[in-house]
Image 1 (spheres, one colour):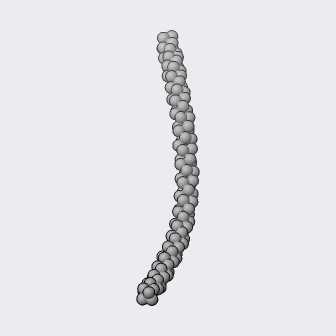
Image 2 (image 1 turned 180 degrees about the vertical axis):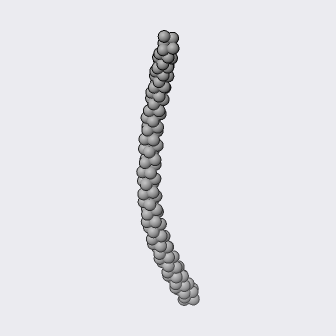
Length: 125
């Protein structure tokens, strides 16, 4: 019976040793995984900071572009309003010029008629 018990005890010690080795390997793997997770978290945090910084920069650029577009819009709008005013002024000026020209033609015709009639009256008397 002793022969049977001795191999069993030895076998038991070997199994315990293998279990301890396996436990150590598992603990190493867990530590490596924890380290890997910590590294990934640090990298993620760094990437997040970079993305936040880039987003802030893009938001500032968008604000500047929005302001510039607003300025362009107001300039175009005011230019169109001024253009409409100038067009109305030109139409009014054109009408006034035509009226003055017609008045001058009529006035010149009357003066010419008076000059001719006076000349004819002088000659005819």
